[in-house]
Image (cartoon, rainbow, N blue to C red):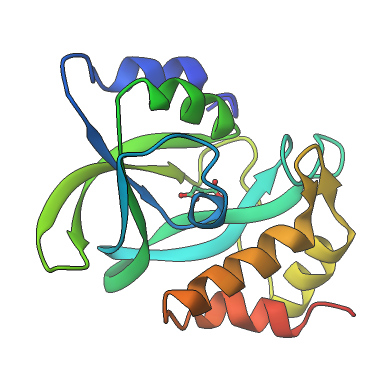
Length: 185
Ligand code: SIN
């Protein structure tokens, strides 16, 4: 699959006619909301875990020296906490461009912080996309992140801001925190 998913995502869901749509964010969408939203709330989805296994050619790296950013990988029964945003459908025109480097939209059930359920969209970069990097030990991912930078800034800023945002949500994500601990000073 090509790593530019804009056209594919536009064809995937017809959001026309909906007043609003929930979006589940677990990576940069937690700490960088560069779009308008109607409301935001902590939320979780089940069966997925956050992993720094996706290459970034366009935000935190370049095609020649990709950065490492998060995607979700399947993990039966595991909860993954992030932030849900209720947005108008036109916001996906912007999000599809922002998340174009390998991410596809999927509908998922999410549990909001008051215990209610909502169906919403989540961007996931699956293993078959051209920018996929896959697993590596925390110290290798940390070294990789330390050296990478792209048009959106230093890759380490992505990691540090995500870790801060997760702490603010009272989430202990050992994968993220282990990489943060290994970051060269
Ligand atoms: C997300 O944050 O939900 C998607 C991945 C990213 O943009 O970092």
